[in-house]
Length: 121
Image (cartoon, rainbow, N blue to C red; front, top):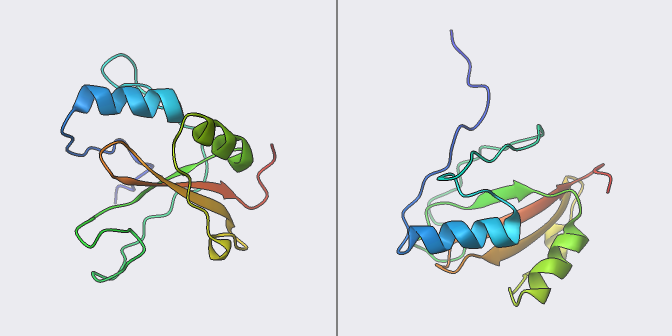
């Protein structure tokens, strides 16, 4: 049997795809795929369905939440806030698996940033 070896892409609808691609590249360092393919570092990836009525994603109609690993969450928070991006943090989001924060892209999609436990800066 063939085995999935990783995530090959993440595709979603956008009102202004080019502006959103530019935002992801500017603030998260994720290359605009029309120019180059973003190469991520190897590391843990979690695929986890949540109950239909979860409030973890934010809006009730939000069907997904993407989580990006970061090597230095404090530096990411500083950079995002300096760019005027609201960063949400909750004490319960810091746990034995690592530290988390949440932002939203310009179209309101939630993005979780995660520095896994044991990550070195």
